[in-house]
Length: 229
Image (cartoon, rainbow, N blue to C red; front, side, top):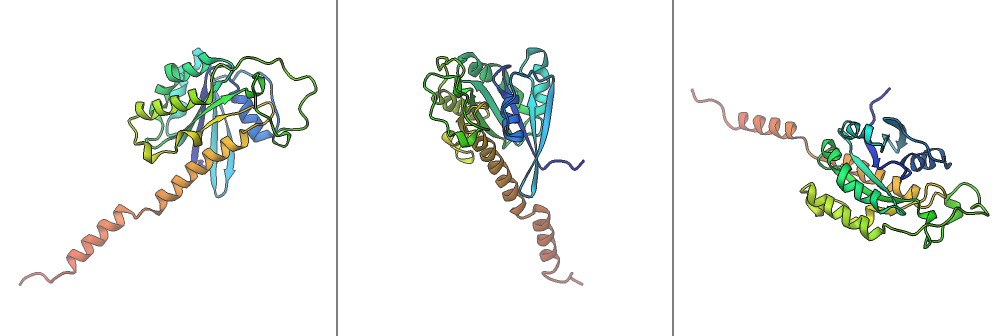
């Protein structure tokens, strides 16, 4: 199997809907509660580039595997449940350190899932989901974590990594509220992340090679003048 050009990892506590988000995007359907054991991945072709998307387990007993899955990641999607404030806090307390093995210029996205369960959920375009919204919607819950909280976490993350903000996307571009059940903002999330990481690959490949520049300098020096006799 060909090695993927890009590695994207989804991190977050258990039951925030990481696997459901991945299934909604890759299979265009909603899958109910499924506990991931260890990790699983899906390959996605994005233009000329192959992307591996890694879904990780949120359970404590698999926590140590997170840094292994993050090794060499070009992007990490930090996921929480908008109806569970603690799931957002867990990202900072348990999961940020796991990303230390990712690439130095790793792109981060902070995603609040399960927006369909909240009292004040936004109007959802049925075209984003598969079929009509059910006549008997799930019981509503109070929203505990807001997009402003995600933006704050993203800015804290940049400081934690000691990164220069100007070299990374602004928080508003990479903080999302999604619903794996209806499909709300799911495509936007993954396609934004893919576009950001692939554009970095293209920029890196366009940079002049240091090796070529060194060879050119050596050739120019040797061609300046003949040796003295």
